[in-house]
Length: 396
Ligand code: PMP
Ligand code: GLU
Image (tube, rainbow, N blue to C red):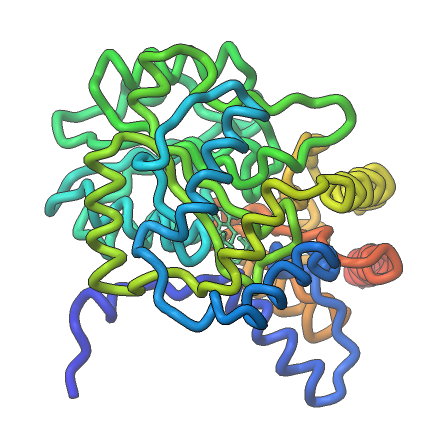
């Protein structure tokens, strides 16, 4: 059977592939420390687990739900946006999805025609470009420069704008860089997008994971005009340690959301019912467990950052949010005699027993991504192994 061109052109997720490879090696008995996938290493908080169990026991979780999600969760999402950011939305402007990943997928399916362009700041999260391509669109990458902490500017956006430009993705705090756009930067980008009539896709999934006094500004809070031009994408995976439950959501223009609901009705039908009841508890229940996890990430970042920055040849600004370090390791590779990041990452896996993700999948092949969503013992050991690996290679 011949595969479709679409399937043949697809680049599978490098983050999930690296994690799967590390898991398979571990299962063979190899001593591998995996800092690959970005998922919190904590149990989902007890109150959230109990909400799912109660939904199952009461029979509520046995059935299909509306394709938009259960009304209680749509309401919990609008209440959350009101409570945390003062944003007012109607529940008709909400779709609950199978993870934020499917919210993005359905969104691109809903808004893109063939060859429509989506501006994607680089480095980018691995799925954006592929999802745009699956919707027959064209990703247009704009490279954030090191002097601007890998963030893009309006001048750069203006340079790639074309009449085909349909949307721009803003992911702040960023996966993979952990950097946050300031209010002023977002205002400039937002006003530019409004003037050009380009949809803003605000991937706010790391918005609660900010550290050391840094502040996350949702682009939707800057002005009413920008809010109207924006679709918010978010979910419970990262804040509440619920990656396996697969609940995300999108909020914004009712017509776009309705198109996404129709797409869901013909593809997933609805996200898992029990997970939706759990997500209601996550959003409206006590927030202390989420805050404890945030503090744990902050502590890890503060201890890990100097250790990674001290690896010979590494260039790294301290991230402000999310749970990744994204060092430029060009200098390190030079010292060790590697010219290709994939070879370097492969050698770290095979010789040092540390699994990481290459920056190539994020459009930045001089970088590697270290996820610190792992316990401190693993993180400390892994960085010590990377450091000795580099020192040994340097000596040779
Ligand atoms: N956006 C970004 C930037 C992410 O890192 C992730 C992580 N997988 C997602 C969206 C999707 O998250 P999920 O599907 O688990 O909600
Ligand atoms: N967003 C996470 C990561 O970047 C999860 C993996 C994925 O969905 O690609 O590692």
